[in-house]
Image (cartoon, rainbow, N blue to C red; front, side):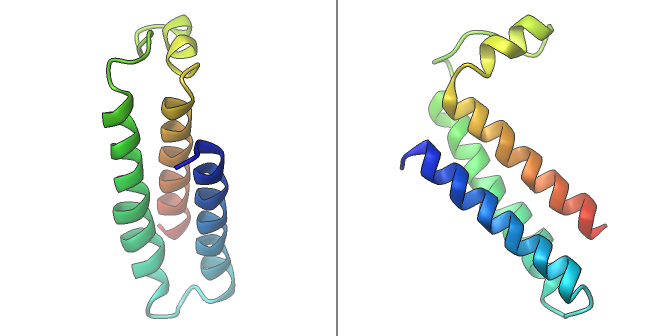
Length: 95
């Protein structure tokens, strides 16, 4: 899948989760959708797949700012980082 398309889909799915949290936070399925299905299964699965497929194909690491900058030059790793942020953001929003 094209990473730009994946980025747009992930953003729209997270937006739908936020709409649920804002509009109907007490609905019995809001928690399931925002933290269970989106945060854990969907976003977690995509995040893991992106990291697995890009493992060893990029330079850098998390030991310095320069290393992180090099790491995020890989578009797949950058998309994985963004999806990780979306999942965490929804989790904190629900909490």
